[in-house]
Structure formats: C-alpha cells, structure tokens
Image (tube, rainbow, N blue to C red; front, side, top):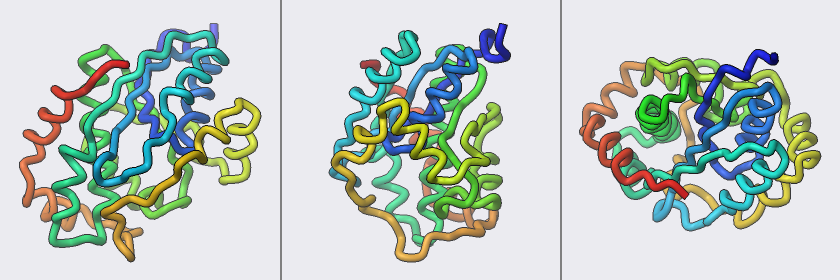
Length: 212
C-alpha cells in the first residue's frame, strides 16, 4: 500500500503547466484525485483546455478524476479587481481560490487541497505569500512541486503529455498588477478583504460550481 491510497484530494487545476503535474504526482502516489478548475472568465478571456488536460490525466492514471468548474472570474476576480490596493490582488486571488476549494473539498469529503505551487516562481508563490495565503483556510494544503524548479516541472509535463495542452491559448490576467506584492502583510490583506463580503462571495461561487 502506498501512502496515498487512503487519501482523497482536491487539486486546484489552473490549466497551466504546474497543476496537472501536481495532480499526476498525487495520483501516482495512490491518492484519489478530484479536480477543481477556477474559471477566470470574463477577467481572462483565454479558455485553456482544462477538459483535455483532465481527460489526458484520466487515461494516464486510470482514475475517474471528477472535474468541477467554479465561476471565479465572475464572482471573485471582478471584486478583487476593484480593491484599493492593487499590489495584493494575486494573493487575494489565491486566498479566494483556496476558500472555495476548501468548501468544495469538505462537501465532497476530500481530506486536503493540492496546489501546483513551487517556491518562488511567481509573486503569489514566495514563502511569505504562501504563508499569508495558507492563513485563509483550515484545511491542509499539499504542494508536491514545492522543491522543484521550472525545468524539472516542464520535463514531467512533457513526459505525461500535458505540456502542449497547457501552453495553448495563453492569455494575460485582466487584473494583474504592474508590481505584485512578493512580501504580503496579513494586515494589508485583511484591510483589502474588509472591502468585500468574503463569506457571501465564497458561498455564491460554491453554489454555482458545476460538475463536468
């Protein structure tokens, strides 16, 4: 028995290069993988081929891999984009993704979330920002790529044949700040979230989640 055979996980899958690799590694470890995609439309107009990626992972791992899609852009990003402190938008985005993920995981009896973070790659993945993002939830978060560099992740993505799918239709986030915070302070994050009805936003997003 591998360590993961008792574990049901919910992977937050963006459609980028990293999170499909994280999903694959968790499946290879024996975990039962469920998938949540945060749909960023209309903030980001690129429609990444998430369904194709999940179908590839299903064939590769022989798992059912249920896929849910949440209207993150419509419900959460539209309000995050209006915050008075634009530098913290990336951190706010991750906190809301994790909150919706936690709510769905508890509903579907998943024990933990899985993220495709690797340390220091982008603004939301510095150690300080990961700590601030983690504070938004109480569910454990596993990060199987945390110690890998980008080239190592790309190598695995090419091996499992998700890389070409992940680089299709790449678009820019419509609320990405010019200078994202790399050293977020929890007090500033709480000030920004005080401008929003966090609980209502998470509930609305969860209620609108669709299973594909």
